[in-house]
Amino acid sequence: MDVAILGCGYVGLELARQLEAGGHDAVGVRRSEDGLTAVRETGAEAVQADVTDADSLAAVPDVDAVVFAASSGGRGAEAAREVYVDGLRTAVEHFGTRADTPDQFVYTSSTGVYGDHDGGWVEEATPLDPTTEKTEVLVDAERVALDEAPVYGMDPTVVRFAGLYGPDRYRLLRYLEGPVTEGYLNMVHRDDAAGVVRFALAAVDEDVLLAVDDEPVDKWTFADWLADEAGVDHPEKQTVEERIEAGDLSTPAERRLRTRKRCSNDRLRELGYEFAYPTFREGYRAAVETFERGEYK
Image (cartoon, rainbow, N blue to C red; front, side):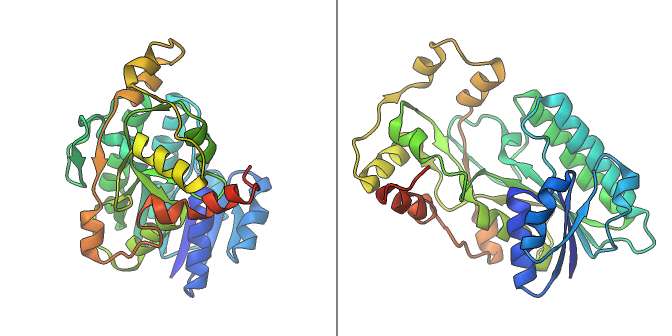
């Protein structure tokens, strides 16, 4: 299988490594030349192109599947719409009108599209209820992928990532030092986020997949587990209202803080996906060991 990864960043690079290791050919696409070396180091072909520029996408060779994992760089809703909706539509139209059209089109979304469920469980079929402008953009982008890719004969899949963590994205000190605000953590290790996309490309005929590990965890419980493993005192705790009373949160940040849900991976497990890091305990082991050696940064 030949796979183009548009936005070959944190998860995309790991996906490229996994695809190449599995005997497939990956093409990592980055907007900036600065990231192309990292793409080449995975064994993948590196191409500089911008998803918002159809002409630049002509540099990407014909492939069997496209993975859209581009990022708006943490900017606001307007920048997110430019990438996730306009850029996604540009990519769908560009690859869909090629003489050799890809068979599959995967869009990587977020569990943020579910909104608040007061700590209840959500799954693939749970109705979407975005609570911020940015998550509204993500819902619009999902519609582009699911509704427009089939027009060109491409089979779409939306993979909704829970909170990503892993090398260079462990939040160890944040939880060890506190204060820790109450709520739930829905997480997936970078390697499994990439693994779920690879799984979707390989053999899964699903419109939507939730990429989340086996155990959504209460933040206070998670923080105390980290402290016990690292051999330090439990951190200070605070309620949501106590955090909000500090008065330094933006309206979107406050809404995110009030959003509580637990994401289920039952469907992914039923389909046969095997996690490299089924819970935070396995996933955070490397970070804890680095901390214990005094090498954590």
